[in-house]
Length: 252
View (cartoon, rainbow, N blue to C red):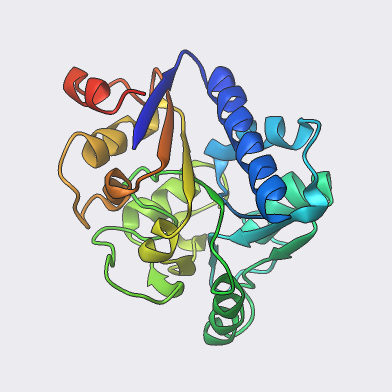
């Protein structure tokens, strides 16, 4: 794992998008197509805006998988991650193939369908965030590090649900769904390359918990310390609580 710290959210977005574009193009050149995982949430706004405007990416040869979605939410709802991905990635690029997680269908059916697709070949690159509680996808602490299932149904903890309300996706805490479909930790870790996009001061405590300490299900994103090809992109604010020793240990 490598940690990179950038002076601002804008610079972080540009550098992460450059790396993401290079990884997508490399996969297309070497294998004829790129399989990617796309994250959602407010922290991804700037990154996706830059990435979708970059020239030279053959999006018709890209296949995208979805990290997570609330159970019981329509894909037309403002908080739907299906809607997020359509508005901010799919419709902007004309991406060739994508697998969205329906929040309105039976979760077991959705999981079976998407799991069958994701098992067909390795994923080339995943774009992920880290939650304020340290979650990776919707794997809240204590996260399941052991399941081999590609997707699972999870119960969202209070901190996670408060973050979703705080980001403006829901009017009240009671409106935030209590369950979601999430890609599992082991499935994320199978990805050839992972790029973490984690700006903002509100993520500083989670970044410290995940990367200044040991790997633990209580800090789910800490598992990325064990991935052989992960880059965590931070801005000065999200990196503000990391120790100098950690920054030096994980520098490029």
